[in-house]
Image (cartoon, rainbow, N blue to C red):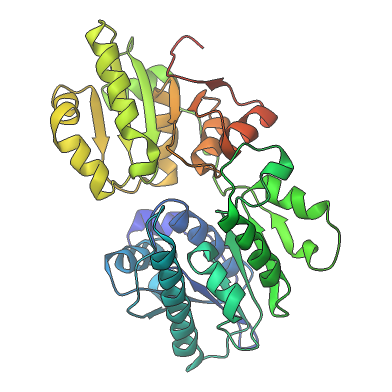
Length: 376
C-alpha cells in the first residue's frame, strides 16, 4: 500500500470477534459498479463489519482486487474469486439474456458457497443486482436462508406511470411481475435503486413489500471545485475552446459516434472545439476512435483521450475544464451517475428528451441542452 493510498484510507473501527461478516459480490469494474462497491465497503468497514468481496478471476476481477487493496489495505479484506460469465452487454436477444442471467445466478451462488466455507455470512449484498435479478426472482435466492439485499439500476416497467418517456413493451410487463415476485422473497431485506421514480412508484403502493424499495442517489463525493482557467491550464486545453466532456465507462450506448459527427461539423465551420473523452473504453469505442473521423480528431488534439478509470479525486479537474457534459446516450432511459457529478459541478448537460436523465434533470434544475453549447 502506497503512502498516498494509506493517507486516503478511512479510519475505521477494527472488527472484533463478535462482528458480523458481509459478502459483497461484484464481478464487474466498469461504470457505476466499482464506485458503488468502494462506497459500500468503506461504509461496512467504518461500522466494524468484516468484509468479504466475491468477484471473478478475469481482468475485471483483478482490477477490483487491486483497487480495493490500494484503498483499504490487504489485511482488512478477504477475497473470494471464482470463474464466471461476464456481465451481458445491453440489447441482446431474449434467449441469450435469459441464459446469461441463469449463469450469473449460478456464479453468485458459487461465490456464496465458497465464502461460507470459512466464515458464516450474516448478509449478502449485490451492488449490481440487475445482472441476475430476474433469475433470482424466478428461481429464488441463491443464498439459502441468509438475508440479502442489492441495487437495481435498469427497470422500465414503472416509467409510464411516473410520466417518464420510455420504451415499455410486453417483455417489460413480465419484468414488472417478476420484480414484484422478487420483493416477496422473505430473505430480501432491501432493494435499493438509483432511480428516484422507482422509489416513488412503490411509495405510492403502500405495503410491507413495497417498503423494501428504497431510493439512494448515485454515490459521488462532491470533492473540490477547480476553476475553469486553472483546470484548462493543467490539462493544456485552449482557454477559448468549447470543451465537451464525455465521462465514465465509454461504450456504445454513450453516443460517441453522434458526438464525433457534431465535433467534425463544428470544426469544419471554424469553431474551436475540444472533447475530453475520459474513462475506460469498450472495444467498440476504442475502434471508433482509432479509425476514420475519430482517428483524425484524436491526432489533431480535438479529442483528448484518457482511457482508464479516473479516481474521484481527479474528477473536479475535468469537470472544471468543460463547458458542457455529454449525456446524449443512445436508446438509454436509465439514470446516469455522470448527471449527479455534472449537477455537483454546476455544468449543463446534453441529453435526449426521454428517460430518467431528462426527467431527473428537469426536476432538479440541471441546465439542459439538446446539443453542445458553450454560451450557457
